[in-house]
Image 1: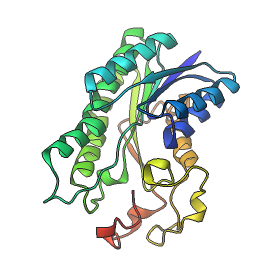
Image 2 (image 1 turned 120 degrees about the vertical axis):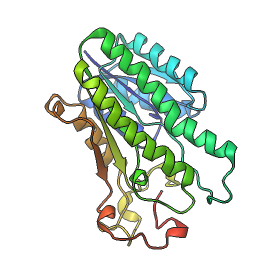
Image 3 (image 1 turned 30 degrees about the vertical axis):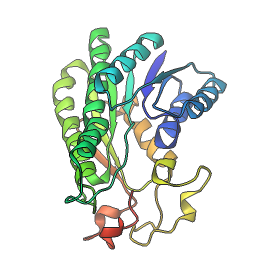
Length: 259
């Protein structure tokens, strides 16, 4: 039986990924920070698909405790074959106004916590000796700067480079590691109410004219967990509706429609 852990699974990309993996035969460990009701709802849908669901709470602001939660969830599932490192936060402050406390929190939640959690999952995979898959959910802002994004862009840039080092070192254990870097995605974290379709949100600065749907990002993540993706590792796959084809981002101070 295949088992996957997904962090940030109570909504958005994490929820869409967990439900897709359940339909593809994975038992799921569903990580959440504060939305217990959302996590329970996702768990019920996983179980309705005939798969097992294990809930675990983690807060990347405490990286050691978050890693311990991942380790315990893997134990409860009987192992981990795939780890989707999705949980994170979004924060904006201009460079001259950013505080050290907010900078440190951003790096803890979007870089150090994910590092510790991936390390815990990878150690489980190595010990079991069956290989595995890790997908780190980054952002187009690992390459594209955004106004007010000094901490966020630094964290995501580091996350994508971490992905490459992990891939280099874990390949000998049969573990692939890739990053998925979405552009703006219509999720609650980005202020989009549940039930709103991305097609109803015009974005003139994005070539396809709208944000991503969470299920579209989930489909790319799920592909990277497939057996046929075994030769793909150390890559950052951008899913942005063509945003990076543009030479510049309009209205950058206002975010250019990006989240």
